[in-house]
Image 1 (spheres, one colour):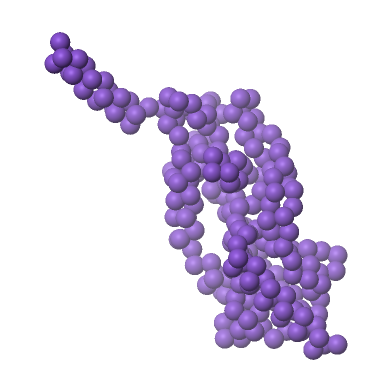
Image 2 (tube, rainbow, N blue to C red):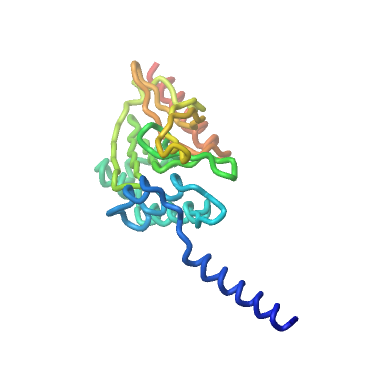
Length: 233
């Protein structure tokens, strides 16, 4: 009897192992339609944001999504892309060290999710580089989507005399969250950390992750702007 029970346990373990490796992600009809024609990374992203994490469904974990995003970002040399777009020799852009921000973008044109680690993630990510010469600030921004082929590039340049301020803000913004129960998107409010360049009548935002380092570099930018303003007065 003991040998028989032992055999049953072994068979059960093998069966569960095979099932765990082949079980369905529990894709809904909407997800199955959405992932048609997508590449592996995009399929993973859609399943991360839109699938039901039922006990018998495979799930895309937080580390899997983070690793996928890191893999995508590692394929780009954003600093060099910025320099190519700005078309100014790097030796001319050393008023202070270049500044780099990055972080998730939250809006109505992405999927967003409050994850188990307490952090909001979205399917849209943004990388920004700022460069400084004696009279101007040059900005390059690249925004990508993990669930589709969408991406955008933007460059801006500002004279110090036209800049009102450099600042950070934590704003409540509306973002799209997939409601698994209804199979539809709904709009929720989320706090978004952003860096802003303010000029008369306008603001330019950069998504960012708040940290001691970002505070340090922003203080350096503010100090530079004060010096430039004082030298012009």
